[in-house]
Length: 533
Ligand code: URP
Ligand code: ZN
Ligand code: ZN
Ligand code: ZN
Image (cartoon, rainbow, N blue to C red; front, side, top):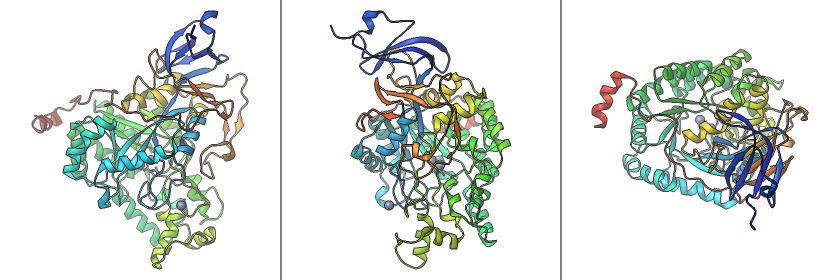
């Protein structure tokens, strides 16, 4: 007789976004089939059995903000730089950190051949198919133009054929930002197609103005990147985008919110009943402006390793306020914003400066240069340094260590932030983000707390293709012991056990997190009525 289950997890402390219960999980054909107090001896026959030894078992992590294989030069933000992780190395790192689904970015550029969003998606999808992936994956589309014909003709294909139900828009970065009226064009088209708009909310003009001021005073070391983006930069942009969303009456999700001011603005909009959701990331709870001064010399390029936009908040006091937002629901999801640039490679962190230097001389960048020497001479030149830091593997362990183990959030909230809410927001629920019969059997199983010894992280323990981690030396109180993707054990006791072709592309539907148009604001409602009728 065929075994009743392929995989059984016993002695689990199952955590969902709402409940915690002691039970066992039976898996068949990649799906959860039953959750019971105990299985009979007959039911155990033929199944692979994992003893969770009382540890937490949660739905596999859904990381909704991961940059992989982004184009050289255009980079994630047009500053140059080449993502050092492809789908193989990035997904390997994800699975080793308890994540079973990633949503990455297919990035349009302003180049004429990139007018078609469908072509952009095909290009990124072929990169994923080239290597395969250890985890399930999908794409958000980054839109940097407002071509009416493309929005009209291609958004329906993106949602219906590709299952891409989210787009990202920028208010900063010269090569990507949209004006307010261009934003409205895309948000309006997104609304018609039930596509959620993700917004990178930093005021590009403020950044440019401050950058010029800093440069005129010779303040160009990596540290000054943070000073060119004080919290008001995010504060203004969040308020403006909230107003745009109020007019269009379509949900927005602020990506990587890192300031108390940004979080406060979002909270106010949520209290008004507007469909405003927020993502935050580990770097905003574990790094501060001081981390951009970590390495001694005032111009030392080493500090470029910590450059991301928005920057970490100024002080540790901000962390505590942001932790409140994690527990009280201001933040909807917690993603990594994994943006991998190597430090030892001319196309990594140093590339922006090298390319700038070379273009000034009318030359191509020279790979063999003494990078540190060159960059020291240029004083770091933060303007040219690719923005972004790695973190797909450390995302869940950092939240466990910093928020769950310290009692700042409950285990249920942990699941909501890292798995259930991203799955609902991006149209993957209840296939992903749920631990119930019929859902994909994606689990992260932690170590039992009683027997696990805290350890200090080194980059050599990680599985990405990046030569540093911002969290080097940090003490971690737990780490995923098993990661299971659709019933297959992909990571067990410190070893990758799955295959790079095990991950599959996932089509997504519209957001299921809240009403599409709650029409909370009466004045706006009056505008929306004639606009939409
Ligand atoms: O610095 C960051 N966040 N880099 C990644 C690109 C982006 O804007 O998400
Ligand atoms: Zn961004
Ligand atoms: Zn990003
Ligand atoms: Zn390269």
